Length: 93
View (cartoon, helix red, strand yellow):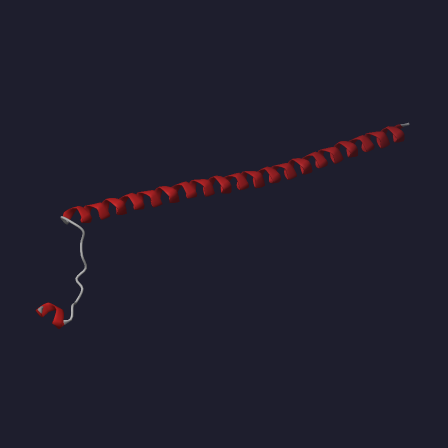
């Protein structure tokens, strides 16, 4: 009878250990899957913020160039005309 009790106790202990190992395995796999999900979300968030920053930089550059272009045009009283070299015959006339 003692032998049967030891067998049942060993069987139960093995069952508990096996359940614990499977549980820890599932837990570890779940944690790794969660880490991959967090990594993916972080990459996506960084990409969105990077695009937003690039848009801000482009808009700032465009505004700067627009102000700079307006500043150089406002100095002149009218539209600028390019100097075109003329042949000597037209200059004398």
